[in-house]
Length: 240
Ligand SMILES: Nc1ncnc2c1ncn2[C@@H]1O[C@H](COP(=O)(O)OP(=O)(O)O)[C@@H](O)[C@H]1O
Ligand SMILES: [Mg+2]
Image 1 (cartoon, rainbow, N blue to C red):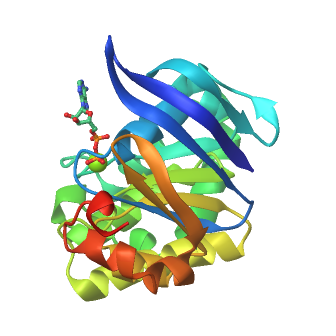
Image 2: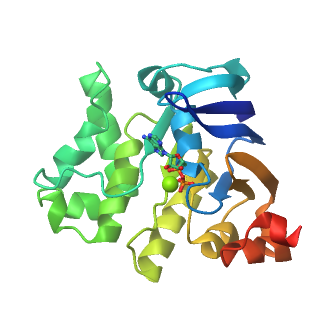
C-alpha cells in the first residue's frame, strides 16, 4: 500500500530524516514509536507532501508520489490527522464534519458521505448542532477522525490521537481505528502511548534520529527488551 525508500529530508536546509524506509500492507495498522524529536511527525509530513524531500522515494500502491502536494495526496486517497486539537471550536459538529469535504466539488457526494460517516459515529448525529468545543476531548478526536473519512480515504495518517485523553477514551479511539482497518482502510499512527498502541496494531516501527531502527510485527516489538528500554527513554545504542 505504502512504501518509503530511504527518505532523506527536512525543513529548509536542516536535515531531519536520514534514511527512513518501510513498507506497509493494505488494511493494516502500523504504529510509529520513538523518542521525542526522532522525526515521527516529520515522516507524516513527508508522506503528505508538507516536507522538502532531498532524496528517496515514496510509493503509494506502487505509484511514485514523491514530492506531490497535500492536495494531490488527498486526491490519491490519503488523509492526515495532525497532532493536537484540530476541530474548529465555535463551529457546530455538523459543520466541522462538512469541512472534511471542502476540497471536493461534488456536493451531493459530500452530503451522502456525511450521512454514511454519521451512521458510523452515532455520537456525531446526536450532537450535530453542538459547538465542537462542547464535546469532550475524546469526542473531538472522534470528530477529527470522522472528518478525515469524508473523502473516503484509503490511507489515514494519524499523529498522536491519544494525547490528553483518559485511558478509556483512548480505547474508544483505538476501537474506531480497528473498525476502519477491518473495513479495508490502512492506518499509520504515531503514538507516545506505545504499549497500548502496539497492543492494538499489526506492525510497529521504531524511529530514532530520523532513521528506521526496527520494523516488525507489533507483538514482537512489544516483547522485545530493547524496545522496553526505549519506552523508558533509553537510547537504542545503550542496549544494542
Ligand atoms: N517546522 C519545523 N522547522 C524546523 N525544524 C522542525 C520543524 N518541525 C520539527 N522540527 C525539528 O525536527 C525534529 C523532529 O521533529 P518531529 O518530527 O516533530 O519529532 P517527533 O514527532 O518524533 O517528536 C526536531 O528536532 C524538531 O525540532
Ligand atoms: Mg510528533
